Image (cartoon, rainbow over all chains, first blue to last red; front, side, top):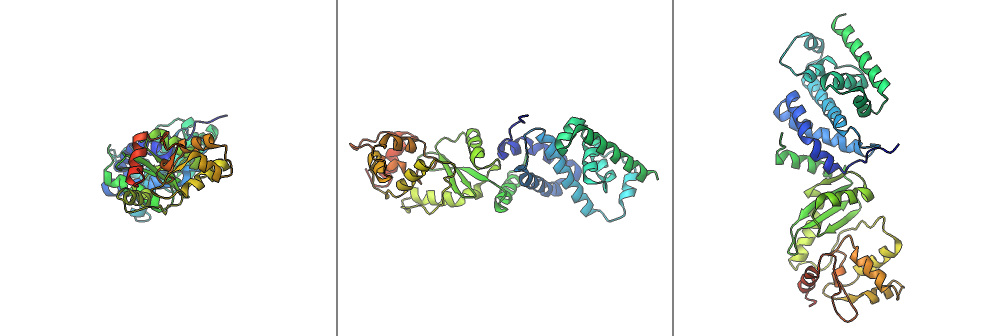
Length: 155
Length: 185
């Protein structure tokens, strides 16, 4: 099967940079978002050569951005606070921001799957594409991730 | 959400400094009009009078890799040497060139072309003779017409056997301007 061609990076960057910055601003706020923006696209550049097709690039780069944001939040947060944060009910936070702390500590694939599913409302097909796995595997990773969070939040 | 030019520039500089770019490009001002200039990890890959960026990008991605990014920093050396050339302060370029993916005949013609000195002209036939194909003047003309790195590879210095200018991919006006700059006309 012939996939969608991978666009020159410049076109990919121009198309998605606003969405990436928006996500990072909401999650991290001003200055940290700028650093995370640079980090996100540098990571994307690093991985770009290994892409096998140009499908779902938006989901792909938003996953990277989210992982960068999670790393930044984790660095800023003292250890041991994570479960408390997860248990508080802060209604003002957007879904993906809440998920950022809830999913902390999950294996990377499960974490990405849960956030893309419930934070960004992507379909399993889109998640599979973003993670480079099958749709079944994406579904599996999401439900395993959710079960793991449940066990942790209400032991 | 708009990206500040500072944030944008910071990313582009970092990408280039970290060597994560297959080809960096920018549009550079010159007395013969704007030039699209692209530099790969192997050297100067393209100079074009056609500054419609999107079409150039697809082409570059195909031979040098998909990580094609506008990066003023990546073309700094080329920009400086071109500025010096147009200011009349430089007669030869010290830039390495990316000639990958070109057929051997093309490469040998371009290598001979690079030896034509500043301010002098040669003919298509002479150039053909110098690569050992004296009857291939027409094929040499085609190589000149498709030259990906004009100015630096000085196809403007190649004229017809009677001294007529013949043609130039960037338009004859530019060919005349370059020859006048070099004092060849």
